[in-house]
Length: 123
Image 1 (cartoon, rainbow, N blue to C red):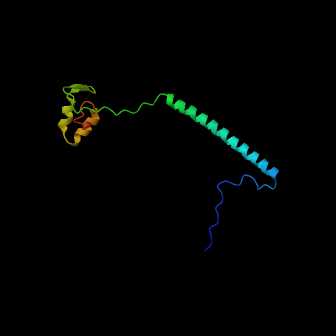
Image 2: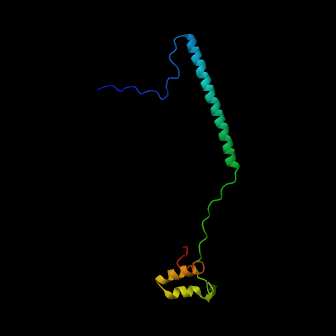
Image 3: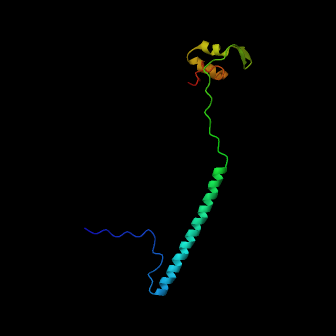
């Protein structure tokens, strides 16, 4: 059974192995500079995020979509004009019965005036 091979580090080695004290000092300086750069970038990101957060907190909220009002389950009474004809349209649609009611409701757009007959009431 072979032993597992060591996995490679997540980041490549940033600098070669130093051969003298002077090289070590130079590499430390280089690493410190990189750390300072990263810290500066993080500060800039933090400032940018704070600006974004302030904008979000002070902006006008988007209105939520409201639920449509329920259609009352009562047909209109009496006669009224629809496409130039006067009659009691809910009674007219009911009079045909069965599958014809749907067609009459659609043909004369009776949904608002005759919600019970046209079966569009909200519970």
